[in-house]
Every structure is written in structure tokens, then in C-alpha cells.
Length: 161
Image (cartoon, rainbow, N blue to C red; front, top):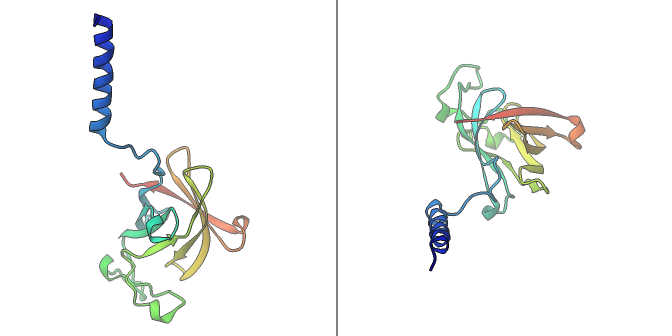
């Protein structure tokens, strides 16, 4: 075997070894998966794939509450914050920390855009339709709406690093 052939062979072996060491890539996973700070800076939201649970490609849960308040407006510890504005009286004592409030999104041709999902807002106790889109600058645009997206409100979330 000539010197050039040996060099090419070693380059191929090293490239294969590097790929095995690095393991499988998550290129197929949307970049929106992870931890996000809400626009109001009131919470960290964890986004992940909930397809295995049958709730669509993206779900979101409250991972951290920042300065939550109780029904009387006074500060409460995050682990004691409850869903006191919920329209369903039976849900008003539900703990907010860890609550899943984003689900049932539909994928689009863009791997970082999801549409026609559901979002529950503990700030007003209402449920809305929602779209999610990762922006070019790395922020996440969430659009909540009733009926059609044109009649809605947007928030920009930033990644938690």
C-alpha cells in the first residue's frame, strides 16, 4: 500500500472514530427544545418532545417560577404557587411548578415551527390556540390566539443559558 493510500485510510478511520465518539447527533431534534425565559420574565419554560405521550412534537412545562404571587398579590414560594385564576374551580389548587401548559402542536415543513397547538395561561386562567417559531436571532416567537392567529398576541422568549 502506498503512502497516499495509507494516509487516506487513516483519515477515514479517524473520521469514523470521531463520529462514533461524538455519538448520534440531534440534528433531527428541533432547536426549540430546551429552557426558555418568558417575555414577562416570570418563568422558565422547558420545551421537549412529547410525541411518545401522544401530545404532539412539542410540549412545555413550567420549570421555574420567578417571583410568583398568590391570590392576595403577596409573594409565595415557587413550590406553593397555585393556579388560582383557573376557570375550573377544581383546578385552582393545582401547583403551577411542573405544570404542562403547551401541547398538541402540529409540525410544519420548517423543523423549528409548530402550529395549531394549545397554550394555557395561568395569568388569566384561559386556554388559547398557539404557534411557535424559532427566530433567526435565536429567540422564540409564541403567538397565542382565539380563532385565527391574526387576532392574537405574540411574546418573544429568550433561551436560558
